[in-house]
Image 1: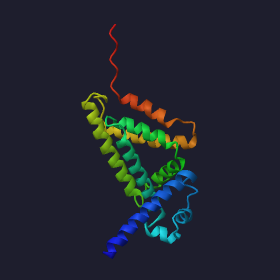
Image 2: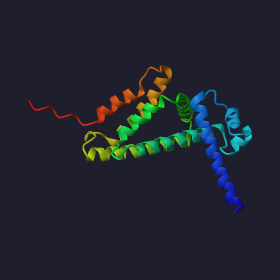
Image 3: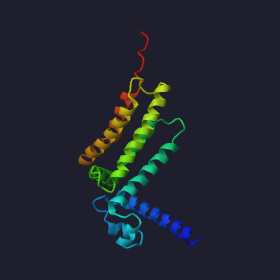
Image 4: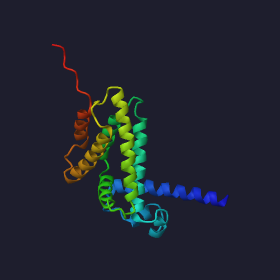
Length: 199
């Protein structure tokens, strides 16, 4: 029984750390979110903080996983008829409100292209899951006529992810870039053409 209680406390502490890290990184940026600052935010030593995650990179990957879970939950909370495209627009539009998390995502995803990086498995699984989820939704949209029938759903899903990743880099370079508007333009290209009005 004591072991189960200790496990539950450990899970609760991990959640507390992730919530604090999301807040600190969103407000102060990835570059200024040191392990010391994150540890201070939850009343732990640096070693105590890393006890729950192993490495700083694994902690940051867990932060991104937590953000993805929150984004997915918000998307599912949209009106029942909401499409993948609607959810994608909404998430990209909200990203501009959390520049620190965008910095973290861009930097960590680039570092994690190295197969030996602690966050490599997270990003590989994230890409696979995104493609699977979005391509499935695109196929359903094709079946009901709300996405172009000539699309390769797997390619379209990968292009959406690539566009989102690239736009985040462009936005960090130039915050005047309207990520949501650019994504909306891309998504309009995936919608079926409007039939010409009768003459």
